[in-house]
Length: 256
Image (cartoon, rainbow, N blue to C red; front, side, top):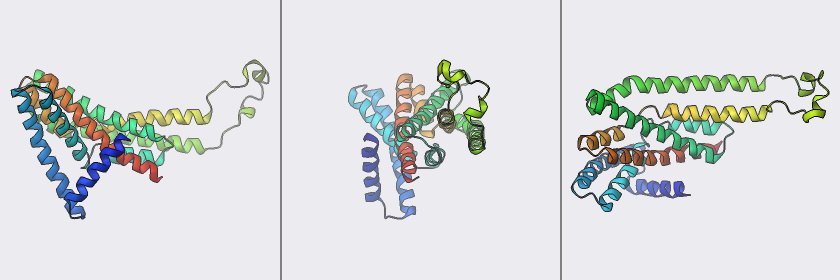
């Protein structure tokens, strides 16, 4: 319900701020991203000067909204999770949970990467972003492709002819008397377990590439000695990202 409310509010804002064309929509989203990115920097500066609840709330809201609008652009696992939701027998709550897991993974990777780069290597934000594009993005694609192949193989195996339980255990008639004949997970149970595992791996793989905004705010905060604030801001961006990704994945789930 909360997800739907936030998405509806953002949709209304977008409709009121564009001319109804794809180009207008794209331009509006880019403008909002730039505005909110400036708000992130201003929010961190404000907290540095006056570390109170109002400053924290303003920064948190800016980070959250940045995540919402930034996730509308390329990446963030939207296509992957939407495809998974549309083609797999998965419940809507699980779709939302996997979207949250993907965003949480993305924020966590950003925190770890920037922490190592800042405290151990002494690298810049640009260097971190370049390395993420060079190594983590291909790794994410490779992991997603591997899970996709595994899903195809599992799907093919699931429709192949199988021996019935009676035929498979014809020489063990006493099994039914000792424990009801249930010695192994059913095909349905196995398929659901495999689907959950594949969903978790897909969500985490999609989150391997950290968000540019998270990298920016983390480096800014770390440079000012505001380590905890940077981490909070990164996860606030992740929450906004999760809202957008969950909404799109839920739409794909409803349309299947």
